[in-house]
Amino acid sequence: APQASPEQVASAVEKFDSFSEGMAAGGSPVPLTLTGEELNLILWNHPNFAPVAGKANVEIEGDVLTSEVSLNFDELPVPEGFLANALKGKFFNGEISLKLGMAAGRPALYMEGLSVNGSAVPDAFLSSIKSQNLLEEAAKNPEATAYFDRIEDMRVEDGKLIIVPKANRRRAATGKPASMA
View 1: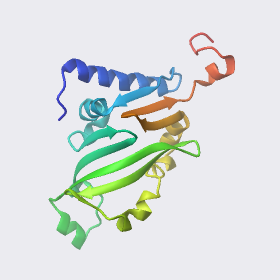
View 2: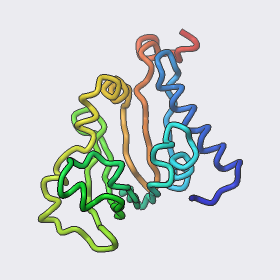
View 3: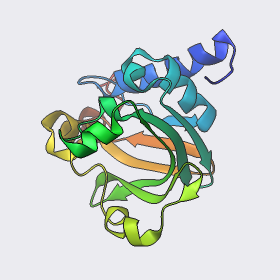
View 4: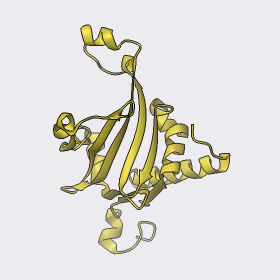
């Protein structure tokens, strides 16, 4: 677990909550900028991320987000049979490097690299995955699509995760913040 004071945890969670409230219908959108440390505090302490708490740690260097993950195969949708039996009670422990950005006006997430138990997985095995937007499947969900439609820009830059929501429609139409329109 990331080491932080209660004030640091509260500050990171409050940043995320303010962003979420702004993204909700009728909310006033505010950009979200997080360091890797703040992102870890949110992943470990925010109730929305309880399913991944303790299963991932992130680090942001330059424009690459890297995550160390530990996933229990028993919790993954592994088809019944020999493979499921062989993986029972086992964990996937690895590190994944990701690039985040926008493609065709939508958030895009691409795998840059993967290592398992400290050994890099050769590009020959990753080439098809590396070219695939990992958020593509999520975009088929109407809720995710509506959320993605409210994002102007999403990127990792200078060691920070940056998400910029689109300006609220009222603001765009009147030139005034929604609270003044």
